[in-house]
Length: 95
Image (cartoon, rainbow, N blue to C red; front, top):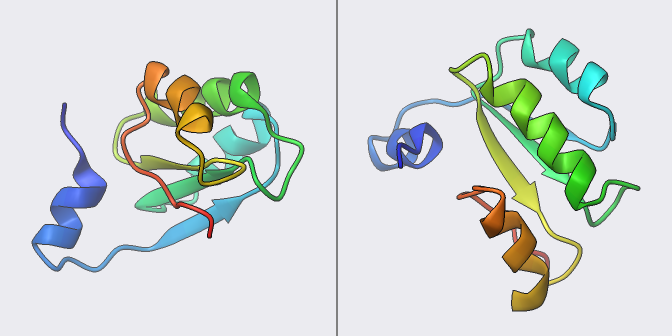
């Protein structure tokens, strides 16, 4: 699976990103169009859940170019499983 975010880190390329707690695929679709290289969808500090981050990730990934990262609610393997099942491959891990 292609991971542009990690490839850019490996190649030391500049990336500009955004941390999103907006919890809505319509808002996410709007911020996607701002030209960020990556967007983190936060489950820890927002009312996001696994279903909402999936629909937001689909809105972002349907357009290409922008990588999607997820921040689970806690550093617990059980909380990563639904994100991994939904094809997330880059994480910001709490604690």
